[in-house]
Structure formats: structure tokens, C-alpha cells
Image (cartoon, rainbow, N blue to C red; front, top):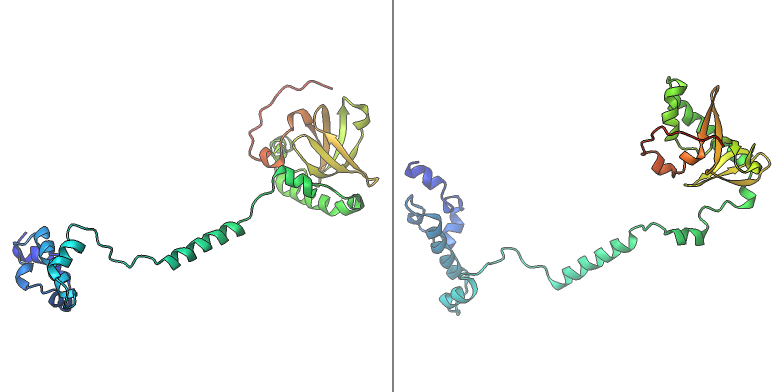
Length: 240
């Protein structure tokens, strides 16, 4: 590398002429033989001396305020600015939506279905939406391949029937699924009644197109959101 290349890489060769003149930098300081540390030592004191107004001891100011100290190039944020930022943070935290706890959901009766809303006809549009959802899910696949998709499907709006149960009173119960939890199906029957059917020890059937699919409740005890991402394995089932 020759002297001309070193001069181009010099720190102060890139400074505008007016800045170099205000700092009192001579062209000789930009020579090829000057290293970065030497240039820094020559630049900083000279710049401080030229920046200080008359009446102050320039050397004393440099020794006490600048020499061997880290100097912030940007103005530090004021106290008012910090207060504004803190208020903005508090406002964002206050406006941030928080999920209700299980206790709050019970207190607000989030999952309660009022008696006047337990109408079979009111849930028929939901069933129609579910049938369209099943048509898209079924597609051109055969019923055997579709069973794996059905395990992860959402049953809200499906018409299910209890085919087998250890409790005889549940056998034959049929209706549209209004709610599904981890352990129960809440269905609206054709008689406009709400029935809570446990999944445990019950076998359900659901009709899609011309096929009837059987769902074993003992192996179906998952929330709909958890079931969609779960990998099911074939397990032996004992007849009820």
C-alpha cells in the first residue's frame, strides 16, 4: 500500500474542509506516516479548545471533562421524555387484552346456553355450515382415509347419536353439538332440550354423505383445539 492509498484511508481525510478548519487540523496531520491513535490525540484537544468560548481555561476543561472519558455524542433524554415513555408503556400494558381465567369464565357464564336459546331450529344453520365444512374436508378421499381427518375435525354443529353406552338412558340420544369440552358433548335435541352427554363409556355415530362413522368417546377425550394437533394411534377397544 503506497502513501496515497493510506491518505485516502485516513480518518480525517473524509472530514469536510470547514470542519477541519474549525478544528485547526493541518494537512500535515493527514500525512501517510500518521497513525489513527496519533491523529485522535491531535484532533480531540484541538477541537475542544476551538469549541470553548473565551473566559474558560481550555486546557483545564479538556483535562477534567474530556480526557480519558467517554463522551456521549447525542443529547441525553430529558426527564420529561422518560416520563412520557413510561406513561406510554403503562398505557400499552393497560390496553393489552388479557384472557379470562377459568374462574372468571364461570362467573360470567361464558359457556352457559340460556333456556330461550335452546332451540333446535336455531342451530340448524350451524349444522349446515358443518356439513359444508365436512364436504371440503372429505373431498375425493375414500371413507377409510377420511377417518384420520375426522379425528381432528371440529364437531360443533354435527348431529351425533349415542349408539352404545353403559348408562341405558343415554342410548338413542341425538342432537346438534352446541358445545364440546374435553369430557362432554352438549347437544340440542329435536325437542329443544339441552343434554350433556359424557364421552366416557359412550360410543357415538355421525352420518356424513352416505357413510356412518363411529366415534369411541373413551379415545376422544380431548379438547377440539388439542385434538387438531394430536397424532392418534390405533388402540384396541372393548365393547360396552
